Image (cartoon, one colour):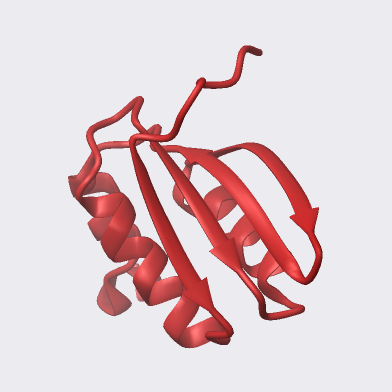
Length: 96
């Protein structure tokens, strides 16, 4: 798999924890078209697991992850349309 030479958008999540981190990630991915990439930087020790799980659950792809000092960086590609992503995040669809 070839990696993009640069991401279409970057998101610095700082030390935000799971709840806020996932919400910011969802909002940023929502603005991308399928196939575009997002470079995410996070300092929360649990971010690696949170971002990988969120991408897996929403059908997006983690192209690369790497750590520089305390920062975890992810390059993710949007693979689904916004409608599907939105449906997966609706609380009332979990009971169907």
